Amino acid sequence: MRIFDPHIHMTSRTTDDYRAMHTAGVRALVEPSFWLGQPRTSPASFFDYFDSLLGWEPFRAAQYGIAHHCTIALNPKEANDPRCTPVLDALPRYLVKDNVVAVGEIGYDSMTPAEDAALAAQLQLAADHGLPALVHTPHRDKLAGLRRTIDVVQESALAPERVLLDHLNETTVKDAAGSGCWLGFSIYPDTKMDEDRMVAVLKAHGTDRILVNSAADWGRSDPLKTRKVADAMLAAGFSTDDVDQVVWRNPVAFYAQSGRLQLDQLDQLDPYDVPAPEALHEGNSILRGGE
Image 1 (cartoon, rainbow, N blue to C red):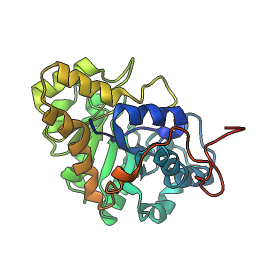
Image 2: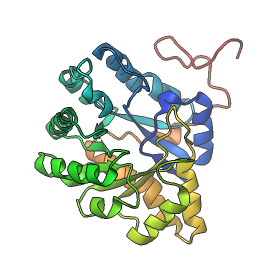
Image 3: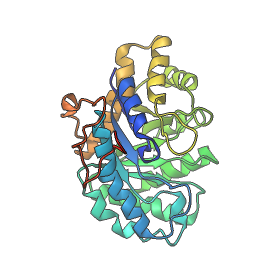
Image 4: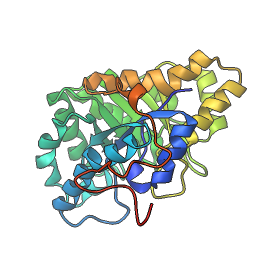
């Protein structure tokens, strides 16, 4: 089974997670830029983070046979902090990088005027750079937030088929499906969606334009949830072709709109039992001590 996790925050995960993900079938992923968990106090902290998404994380992933891509943006939560908003002016120099396959995560957290402005500006940046957009729908007032998001997308220069509405659930899937956008579902141990609920959504709405992801981060989450959805689909009677569409072909089709997916080397990416000591990124290895 081949799996493409279209939304996972590997900066928050251990190198052992890469090994487990490869064993489970993950061969490609997209890591969206997101909130650190505590306030960033200057744009410079974003730039170091963006650089790690373009350098260190692809290096770590490659040691375990996984192609790593990223999305770059000012996230919705920090769009409310005046110390962070200058990041918007610096985004164009990152959005031209080869491994950047979308603008994201953008969208809403608390649905403030500052978030309105940041969302509209970054949808325009996506259109200007020929990139799709990964949109975070809010965790509170989710249906109202989704509808507001769709309105802003429709007013933007970015076509709906170049937008992925993420963190959807049963309350928002109908409106999202009618928008012309792609539909994303995050599968979590306690919150958001779980495997059985996701299978029910797929039975009701089909497999077209639907992506599932683990969205694993520094909170309680599971980087193998995408594989667990695939297994649950098979147990529920979906075909192997249905599963391949949801966990591989759909994310490939969405992010291929960037023209930057690099999947042709996957057959050559064989994970080491122990990463080779000579494998270095800017002079650094993932090995420690006497390994």
